[in-house]
Length: 226
Image (cartoon, rainbow, N blue to C red; front, side):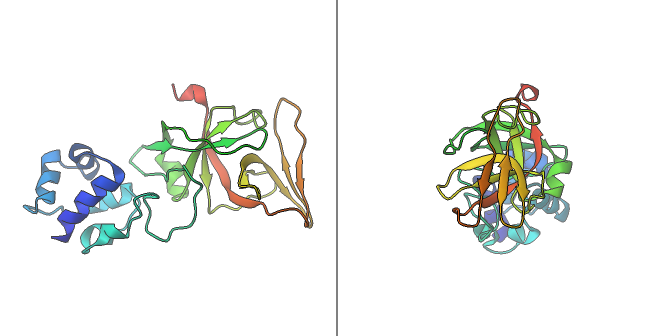
């Protein structure tokens, strides 16, 4: 039965127990076990709740091989656009979103992204407006007037920065930095917003490429995560 296989693969990809999936679907863990053993099938309401939570379509749960179309790394349908290494896509829930962040972005001197592992919670109302957003942890103080070091930022790869927005960008040497974005006709300026003194980063037409990873749409300060 395709649904039983898809339920098993959903739990494997998103690393949830039968009880945890049952809570999302509005049933018991034993009911999930019955689904996986092919003894019963979930009602459409349960399928809709699971699909909404993990931001997949109902067809991924209903159709034969549906969950094979979900990338186990990005946890999105295969072929979804790029996210930086180490970032984990957001998974929606009813009130807040448990979010595992595995990347760190530097709000100081340019530096390589580092790997971390923290679990934070993001309001579902925020996630609803930014379905492909992912989280990164901030290191450095060049944005500490608005975003303290150690905060988690939610980055939307589909949201192009406007002048004054806080953007996460990647330079030609594949290093990520978070700054305020100001783009003119021929130059791009990435400006700090800090209590410390930082020089603006200015890129002209002859400089190497600067790729926009995404725009910061929400953040949570470190002291609020305790």
